[in-house]
Amino acid sequence: MKKTMLRMTYLSALSVALLTGCSSSVEEDELIAANRGAQALYEDAKQSLEVGNFGAAANILSQLDSRYPFGPLSHQIQLDLIYAYYKTGNTEQTLATIDRFIRLNPNHSDVDYAQYMRGLTNMEADDNLFQDLFGIDRSDRDPSKTREAFADFRTLIEKYPDSKYAPDARKRMVFIKNRLADYEIAIARFYMRRQAYVAAANRGRYVLENYPDSSAVQNALEIMVECYDQLNLQELKDNAMKTLKLNFPNSDFIS
Image (cartoon, rainbow, N blue to C red; front, top):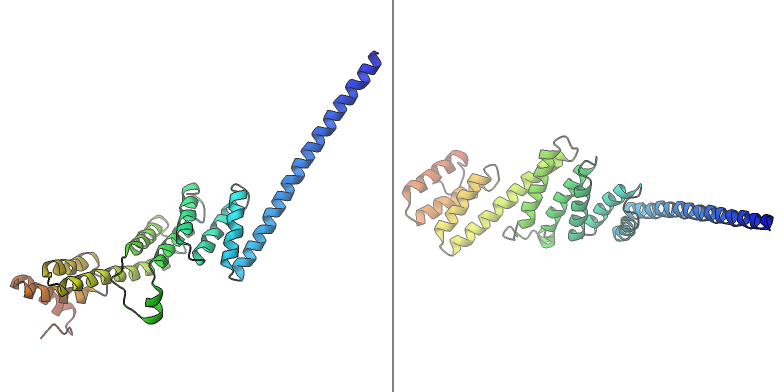
């Protein structure tokens, strides 16, 4: 009887060991298969990126990001997803992915790239297809995204001055300054058409004070000269004219 009980106990223990071993083996196999699947899917996403199929790439990368948020490829998947969303023109998703990456990986070696892409995304969001294709002047449109882009590029330059993206960010900031200055000029001319000369002159002065190195300075001074003339503010007109003559002697306002 004792031998029978011992035999049964031994067989039970052996069965448990075998089942445990099988379970562990199955889990390992599933893990290996999952990793192999993630790598294969990522290769598909990279191929889609290379051929310009950004929508397909974004779809695959988004699935990978959801399934394997902490896997060995997670950081690269997120960075590639930023680019894929950007290329598809999905501004909200791009910015959300960028902000999440920066928040969770503030010390990552590619965080400067994420910050640079934030500036590009906001800059592209402010772009106007008709302006690009047909040369239509839309300098009066809301520049809120342009201001965000300027702040993004400034953050990049201040935090990562040695980044390889910093030189291009500086060039884009110059362009943005001109864009914002042109916006102020457009608003000033709007006020002038409605004979709101004080408001128009203030916009001109704002350009001088905030964008002194922009291409809109001449226009700002000319607006100020005309507005002060309309308001019979001779001293202010003379000061504006003096500055205009000194910096833009070929201006049509100088006679």
